[in-house]
Length: 102
Image (cartoon, rainbow, N blue to C red; front, side):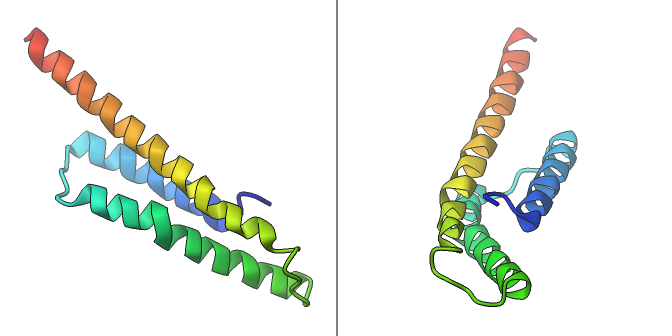
């Protein structure tokens, strides 16, 4: 599976946090560095660890070719991060447009 259970959980948390932060308008300093670290390295590594442990429990013997797809977690999370950046930019643009009309 390219997207595992942990990834679905992270996506659900991300959607929840987006809704929560956008309603409150919370601004986090250093969010780009935090987002880069999370989506660029930390979350893909955790996702790989979870998936390798799942394969170890179900199959027992871990062959390199059987878990090679876990390296695709990095580009998957990069796409999640780019989508997050796109959503933030669109939200900021809509805020700017509403402020300029008033």
